[in-house]
Image (cartoon, rainbow, N blue to C red; front, top):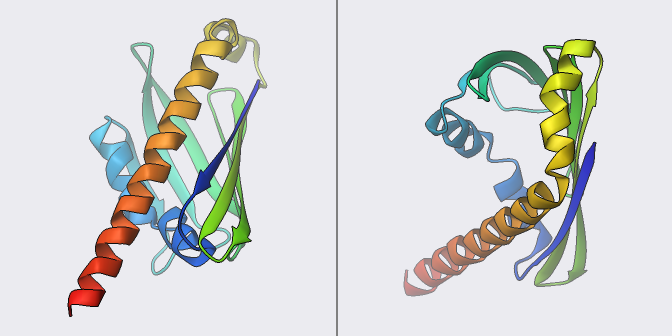
Length: 160
């Protein structure tokens, strides 16, 4: 199963990249949603940085591992992971449309590698249109949040 979305953000590509690679912010968001998460390794995240997680899904707790498979600033970020018979990826491609506009193309893919995992993915396949709509809505929220934070930082710098 694969979901894709595209969003335009009214900020420069470097600022979008800084937001997309703010892993501490993403980690905090996952923990807030009930995911038990542990980053493997010290220092700044980069290609090869890995996480182990326990993810609540439909009343079950699933073990998962993920790592940064590709990190090419400021254009490409790809995570790959697996857990409980499922393999997946999340890929983001950033394209500078002009000095102050960036296009984000995101793909999320999941594939069952075991019979039990097909039972987990089947409801997601049946709800694909709803999930696609939710992804589009969430990416819109993320983009607007990026724009607001960028504007606030720019305004604060202008006042300083």
